[in-house]
Length: 395
Length: 161
Image 1 (cartoon, rainbow over the protein chains, first blue to last red):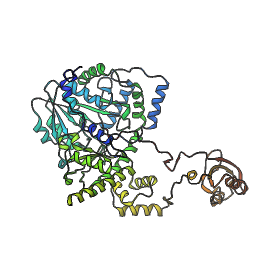
Image 2 (image 1 turned 180 degrees about the vertical axis):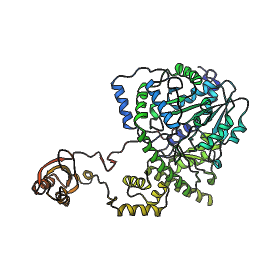
Image 3 (image 1 turned 30 degrees about the vertical axis):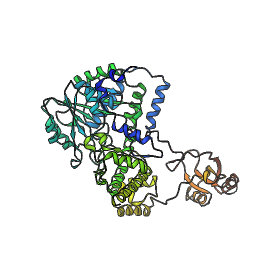
């Protein structure tokens, strides 16, 4: 018998499975579960995009594309970025079309991090950053953002974590799981700390189109002196409801893009051709669909925030993405206990906040990428659950 | 979008939504929602609230038809008189004046095929001014008033990133 434990890489073995995944296994063991745990849109991909993919298949356009992606798509991405973040990227030298935003994150980290380099990761945040940094032999350094700062990264916190080994700052806003957004003045303050250093920024803007309120999304690349030290990452999954198409992109200075492209070239070759053709349609024809979906999320956002606050689970008002991150500290339960008991007794699945970093303890992530009826039913069940908890505590 | 436009969109989706919920979604007070609704009703923008019925499910024998009607407009009042006359029959559920190859689009429903046929031959076709009536029976409904008759399934897993 082969002792796989001896064969397998220690580095990989030491990486834990995602806390979201762990909870999925628990949720899957129950029937009739109402889930508020999904991190993907409930809308189908807009029909024009699906139709373009069908046409592409009919025409047999199923070959590899250029490593960096179809030129036409890169041009469209360049126009999109000019329009959305008022920054010009050279489609020939500064853009790579990747297999989802996730691949772009992996490329960026691997292109920058050497053994022992420190990478600053504001938490709570999406589960992939720290493992990717570890796989690249870097050292993930979490920065615990606070609910009293609306889960924004403050310049003081950033300064306190910078050491001579700091190579990269991950900027995951609009944030999964908190829904926090860094506005212009917040980014100015971060830029002030970074200008004049050699620290690069990985700005994961996958939820940029889902920014609510009068002010639109602002990227750190729009702040003076920051484009040259930033790798901007975005994709089609959330904005265009294209999660399964696996398509994202990176926009970064030529020197950085060049190195990232090598990793992409050897590891991936090129992103799926059908998805790429369809993505051109997404960028050129589907702005209205995106706006319609955003408006719909916005209505649900207000409803669910009020719903949780009315239930006594305090919830700061998120300004982006499609999650709320209410505190469950008043129940006296840990995040894991709360989620397990909720699903066990009332069949509602939400994700424990500590899946997104230690400081997520005491919170839960609730997705509102669901229909209003679904949200209302879940709120009712959670209300009953809380009432029973209170009665138990009294008894 | 203005607040009123947002409100109308919500009511289009679900006119029975509790006022409190609408207020939460729009971020305004319940009194404001009530006022806006009163204004919309008074100004004739909202002319009523009804249920969307799956007619064939409700009554297996029920039949609906879409009728293309060509008419000769009257001297002084154009199409309005004849349209109003057609509209007052209880079998008629909608009447529109159309551009293109015919004048009035009339939807009619009856409790069986004979009832609709009789309506067309005995009531509609003989009306003064009606030149022709082409009846199309509805075979199956897919979508009505923004609602799909069969909703799309949620393919997503229970928990994901």
